[in-house]
Image (cartoon, rainbow, N blue to C red; front, side, top):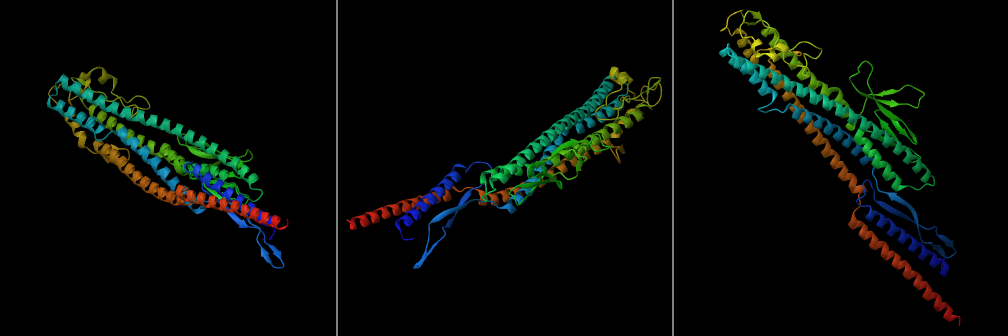
Length: 467
């Protein structure tokens, strides 16, 4: 292989290899800030040597493949960590929203409203014939009812918004699944010759990363270059075949929401029991967090209506037996959504009773008992405690849950960030490193070009010798 043609072939292979190295380094530099991009490295191999009687001679350098720098183990770890972080952050946000709805501690919150309501009854007990004291009792009772109404309205709005978010998340998951399936097909076709398609794989991994954050999806590599995306133990994407998910109310639970995997029309729809990531937290919030908050204020409203009415009905307004203080008609009367003053009280504060006997103007027994409700243990939901203590427990429980979710979210996000930093150390582009590579390939290119010049000089010398 000592002919001029052989040497020129070696020089040509060096030029091409150096040019390809410059191309890869340039591509890395220009995509340094591209989301999801994995740096690439060109792999070279020596040419097949030529065996001659007097020795073995090389034939130059050739490009073997373009390698995408990626660590599958780090990818899987990051997806698991980011799914946990996304779920905890979504739960934290919902609990913090409920905290803001409660608005405690505050001089205008329900705790203050209840205290003012009990104080108004105590003031009426001190002046049982006062019309002004009765007007204050009516105003304070109406205020407490309206506060509970507002809580229920805002929780209803929160539930409506959460349903909309669930729909959006499911739509996004379905869109991503279709895109992954389409990219799978392109990758299988592109890599049929045995070489990797880095750009397509980056596009696919970026979408799988988002699926992991949304639903805790995991990916399993297939021999043909495609991946299988698993969701809750079921297959969402298998090569180019894609299934879709939908929201569905579980049988017997119309107010709850679940996720179903839509089949190909042959079999029944399967219910997915395990959903992670943001969607898992959204389901928890819709099915448990918001209803639990509503149940807490409903229990307080029911206890308030029941206990106040029970005492108020033992009273008298002049010679007439008193009726209910709070309205008890309608299916929502004993809920935070429907609590309101009885029509007779709302229209005339004079119908508020202070006495427990007829025609006793100075009698204040009913007003005293109602004022004492502030510290009287009553039935609130499944507990026995004062109404104020039940409200404080609701606020405290929400705060504790929010703080716990925030701590879990912070810890999970820290783990995800640490894994991401390790992942970036493998797949991220270092501008300094690529500049060094550029100079290295530039020098190799110049050396190969110089080799062609040397061959030209040698051939000229040989030609001159023949003259």
